[in-house]
Length: 399
Ligand code: AMP
Image: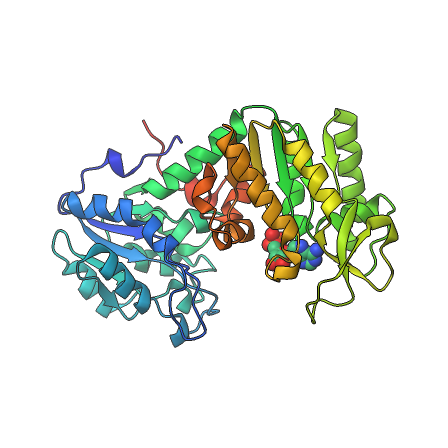
């Protein structure tokens, strides 16, 4: 991590404008279902308040599409934060404008304010310069602690620093970037990369970049079917991205040329439709009927993946092995999660790259039993793909 952080600044009597990631899951009644992201921001919040700064927090929540959607107000986050910190958290009904500015400029040292959802303005995702300037007016110092949004070129992550004299990383950003960067720069070997999930397009750059380092790739989930199709296997009605079949063929050819092992499912749980969850039948991939779709990896594949993982010193996992949200189809994902825990106990470095695989670990109550679970799926994929993070690029370099 070459960026300046909160530790490099004097914060006394400064107004600190901090981009946090409070994009928490909400129940249909609007209750916060998981406050992990709020708690992850506490070390940076504490630092500012303890050092005598005043703090203006900003975040997005959900996808209101540039309109005020009351259900996506950050007010419940202010209440939750207030309970966690045992102190008052002021709340501004808008993130820009005279009223919110009056609130932010009247904060005393040690006080904090949360601004309303940034994405109630379409200018946020458009990285509109005037909007960024209006946000920047809230503070003297900019801190980006929103690792989960660092891959976005939005006003609050990319535009605001242009209008501030000082722009540094918060502790969460620092620790996430440090962990992931060290991992991909200098991993303990052998390194095995486990990929799954639906979107093969997201994972292709990861395979390309990590093929410099990895000893083996295990590919499961919906994305495996595009690779299987590329190799001429039957895929039935399974999820396939037809535009990427040739690219997948090319990638597998490259891996073989470099002598890197890759493993695709040899069996799967097959069902007729995803709309009416049923147990499904286990079948060999080569026996998958035209009217069936694969929704989980099968037991033979689980055994093979376990065997490859045995002895790995570094494991990176991104994407579930099946539609794990349906308990009938969660066995592959659960098995990988459990294997990672076993490897962690044996001394391996095991990293779960955010998103759905992180939710699966949480569902299994195993979040604390691996080396690291990232708070940002998209940002993690960018680092694993070897791409810069826009939200990090704009921060000052250490001297
Ligand atoms: P991604 O965001 O690309 O990591 O995709 C995560 C989603 O992939 C999860 O919601 C899973 O339900 C879904 N998924 C995993 N395996 C399959 C599959 N075999 N068919 C369809 N969807 C899948």
